[in-house]
Length: 226
Image (cartoon, rainbow, N blue to C red; front, side, top):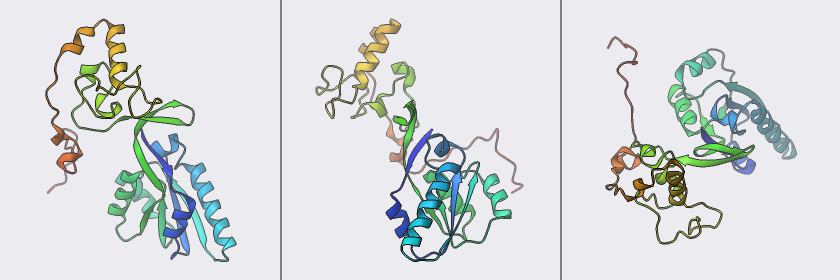
């Protein structure tokens, strides 16, 4: 999932300073699961903003709503049909949702309420860890499901660097060495000989280094009649 966390309230308040009628808009998918942008967080953010404005002696109206997904036009269009009047929309979606909203509702001011962090998975309740960079050329088949591009601090494809000690990365004793994990997995699965296979330099043109990316699936693409 895409993981994010709410911006500091002071930063949000500063962004919203010129506006008096504010819509705090949540998203019902990734940011709901990671407890940063669902209905509960929308209500908490609205309440905190309202209280702050009251203390400042400023009169504001804050309304709330949550879309199932802010990253798809059909849900945005349904919302737009009955969208309440407001000066600004504070989106608690990820960066993708904010940009999709701004594209579809180009006449509206859409501001981000979250800092989008990474794609990851939950280690435990309330703890998420990054495990995918979306590099566009997945190598998990080579490493039996552990990504060296993301989980190795240097994105090395051919074993650990000299800074790895006792299974930990040199950047912190709290960070596992990805290649130690890969080695242990190879050993467990009986494919340790894979450590001897030399991988060529990675083609980074498939990642963001090659510019913004677009995927087109002609088999599912809707006919536009154009």
